Amino acid sequence: MSLHDPVPAPEDAGIQIRNLTVSYDTDRGRFHALNDVTLDIRPRHITGFIGESGSGKTTLAMAMMNAIHNPGRIDGGSVLLEGAGDVLRLKGEELRRLHGRYFGFVFQASSNSLNPLKRIGAQLMDLGRSHGVTDLRALLREAKTLAERMGMDGDRVLTSYQHELSGGMRQRVGIIFALVLKARVIILDEPTTALDMLSQQAVLEIVRTIHQERGLTTVIITHDMGVVAEMADRVVVLYAGRVVEEGPTQSVLRHPRHPYTRGLIHAIPRITGNLHDVEPLQGTPPDLATIPTIGCVFRERCPIRAPICDTVAPTPTSAHGDGIVTCHGVDQHD
Ligand SMILES: Nc1ncnc2c1ncn2[C@@H]1O[C@H](COP(=O)(O)OP(=O)(O)OP(=O)(O)O)[C@@H](O)[C@H]1O
Ligand SMILES: [Mg+2]
Image (tube, rainbow, N blue to C red):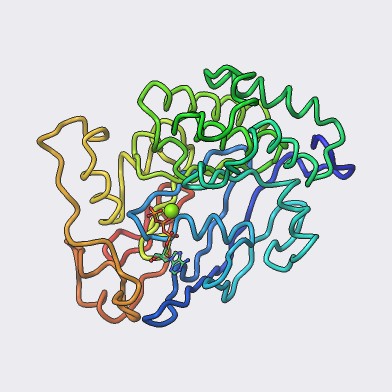
């Protein structure tokens, strides 16, 4: 139940994304950063978004919250959030209230979202006030508990300015901000990149525990396949703004169907476990200005390219039981 809102968000906040297309206006033209993305984010699951830099992970997360700003634009589609309807139809105060009730978001560079001139505790109170929290003491107690569960001195964190905290501590503070309002959907964009292995483990552990305790809908965006393997129930693989594969993590990581997913997994020693098996992914990450507009967007880098890939874009087919793969080269039935 929300700390502050008389109408609680439903326990299970699943999200159905349908045909979502987002573009950015750049000095080279307007390009699609997400192209016709259809995806279900399941409640009480941790979903990992993976894909190379520029594949659209952050854009997808922001679009799910209807938080795409200039020079970006949502061109079409819908984002149905259980209990709230189509998020893309909301704006202004309604959207702000929805963000407070439902979403906790940790930005990719979370230290940038802190105010350098205010102590962390004061910023937490501002956050609470802006979302109508009346019991600010309870909010601070909750933040202190979270800080301590993440291995920090709670009092010290609350009385510090951002520059008094290490990069790793700031990252954990970002996570506290996302959790403290009791949101139902938590989105963590690269939550552990500034952390050493031990702190990373501590942070992932608390995220997982709170996810379970509160029955959250959690999304983790990461480059780190180890984090996905350890944390995510399901994984979404993005390439050039398309979902190329989606399914239960174990199945996708053990039996990747899309050649891009295979490439990603083989490029990482932590998954194969053998340094000799590591093969860098061929080619360079896609540039939106030059990706093909007809046929398959991955074909230039694809080891199983066929003539049809030049002319026809593959459509999602069923894979991994209840998941999908978007590739002409895979068997349609499994
Ligand atoms: N504000 C913006 N203006 C113009 N183009 C943008 C903007 N934000 C993102 N893009 C473009 O949209 C595409 C997707 O970017 P996005 O940040 O969503 O990728 P990402 O998968 O999160 O990458 P990373 O792993 O580097 O964080 C990229 O080609 C990027 O250049
Ligand atoms: Mg990103």
